[in-house]
Image 1 (cartoon, chains in turn yellow, brown):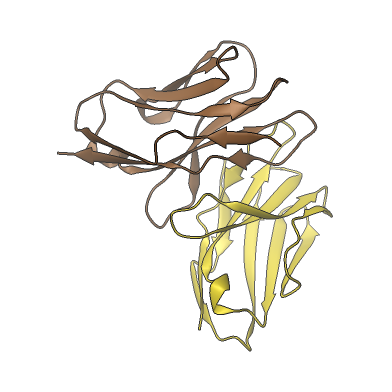
Image 2 (cartoon, one colour):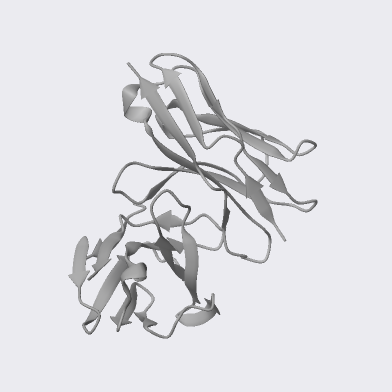
Amino acid sequence: DTEVTQTPKHLVMGMTNKKSLKCEQHMGHRAMYWYKQKAKKPPELMFVYSYEKLSINESVPSRFSPECPNSSLLNLHLHALQPEDSALYLCASSPAEHTQYFGPGTRLTVL
Amino acid sequence: AQSVTQLDSQVPVFEEAPVELRCNYSSSVSVYLFWYVQYPNQGLQLLLKYLSGSTLVKGINGFEAEFNKSQTSFHLRKPSVHISDTAEYFCAVSYPGNTPLVFGKGTRLSVIA
């Protein structure tokens, strides 16, 4: 089973809202990732968690706040977003051998 | 800096024809190579990967790719495409030390009936 689940599938929020994206995997993977993908572009890495600790933050604005409560869960907390933050947000996980498995994504629209 | 070049942004092909999507990477060290497919409004699905061993790698949906170290290439091939293969295809590379994936810009495969 190589399934990564993400909720919600779609999210519409205003610029003053606070919302969270959730990602879950039960494959025992110890690395988890958040990506942002704009239309017709490849995914852009935002954050990497390794063994539940933040190991990479690709200079992401503080209005995006990741959290890894345990080895199976990854959250992305959103606050005061801008319309240009509208995108597909992808979660991925990987075991030690580099292969990343992606979830279906959350389509975020900021009004 | 490491980079991945997908030489074609769009590839139109007739149904049941063969297709090759090209991918080149810049590196002189060991690499791990991946092809992902993304259908409209979906996440990325792993098609195949090269970590070590045989240079010809077979993946899902009848796709295969060949790792060519001397040409730093990892081209994706399918002998006969179907309408359902219409999607965006991304080549990606990572390096020893658990470095993040580096993606190419993607190739849009359009299969024409």
